Length: 228
Image 1: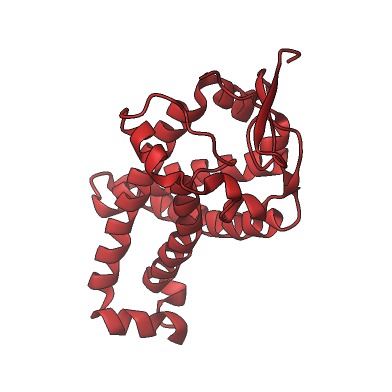
Image 2: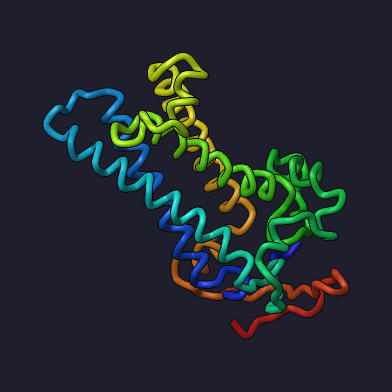
């Protein structure tokens, strides 16, 4: 099956910026986290801790901003269309997602060859994209439980005491990092297999790509757009 067109309306500039702020912060957090956990380079421990705290605060703020923007900015709720609606609707169950979970699982596992027609995000993506902000907030919370200036505040110390002390919090915080590493790997894989080069060009260079067009009202394919 031919691919759908990739238009800028699907990924407004504000969302691309927050997306890559998240990516940069996650890379900094993962690298600095490993350095802090395995202090083989004592000379840069101070830099690693500072970068870790700074990136952690930025990613939390960025996450909150992204969620707020989803209620304000409109975007295309599916590939192949320039029709737009409030972005938050793309995060919620849509008519295009009905009965799509199993077909998408089969597609990602190479059992099904045809690319399923779905909304902007398929059921697996929506599950992940709703879970990630919640996991980020929890990750940030455990980070503040470990940070000197905040660890003794009641809001954070209550969790530390509940799980058995700072070492337990460190273990939770450390292994949560692998959740995000696995998410990044799966996210990159799913983005490439679903959208391929046209999607990457749109996300990196705002370069649109022609293909079949899609009407979100009739949920039907229309003509092929070769003008881009």
